[in-house]
Amino acid sequence: MVLQYNASSVPILQLGLGGKGLWEQMLYDLAANFIRTQLATVQGASVLQPLGGKPRQVMVDVDPQALFARGISPADVSAAINAQNLIPPTGEVKIGDRAYPVSLNSSTRAVAALHDFPIKQQGGATVLVRDVAHVFDQTLKAAEAQFAQARALAGAGGA
Figure (cartoon, one colour):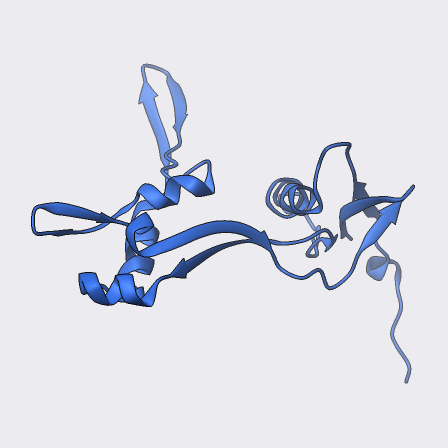
């Protein structure tokens, strides 16, 4: 097999992230959602997914008996969480000769707050996510790992 090789296929930047007190999940989140998005704005850059670290995954374990007792489906739970955990499109507001960015973020800061999301009204009472499910934070199994000085890293690279 012959591969074409030229200067544009060589990465010009490789970045390794590490920090005391930061878990692999936090490092991956920083690389994927903050640093990678900043690098993507560079003209001509191609940015890859982070290597190493552990991707975050928020899990919702529903209780089938609790769902059945309240006449709620797993789709109702999913729809309630999706409808209330939004980052809608934003814009700017012009006041005089200045423009100010407007950002709206109604997503929760803590996973535990998802327990308080209402699903539906039933008999004068509100059924909350906590009544029919348990929400917790976990990570996907890491497919690869990077270490430096016996500490876990997450990284981002690009050309």
